[in-house]
Length: 116
Image 1: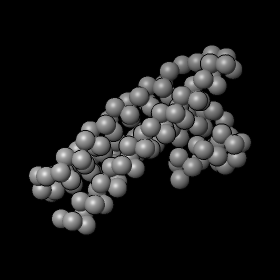
Image 2 (image 1 turned 90 degrees about the vertical axis):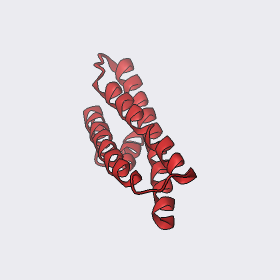
Image 3 (image 1 turned 180 degrees about the horizontal axis):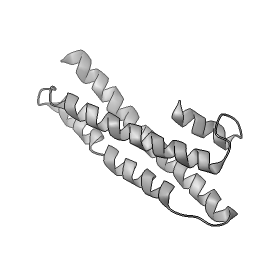
């Protein structure tokens, strides 16, 4: 839902009306991704050693990096329209990267949960 709101912002639709709304949403998204990381890290201790655990941890270990990149991009100050446009583009790009790795984590989690 958060990512979809950000997508809608790029189309001029949805609940996010200003660039600051977008940046606030991105910060919240990064915080939620961090919470997911902690929960899945705990879950990973229950998964037996093997290829599924290895795959889960490979994807999971990428989450903090993407969270940090998104948070850094959001907190980077900008002045002017061109710089703000570039920042919006970067925030959306970093959110997409984070969403991609989260998708892989959730998919792998589901496989592990159904097998073990």
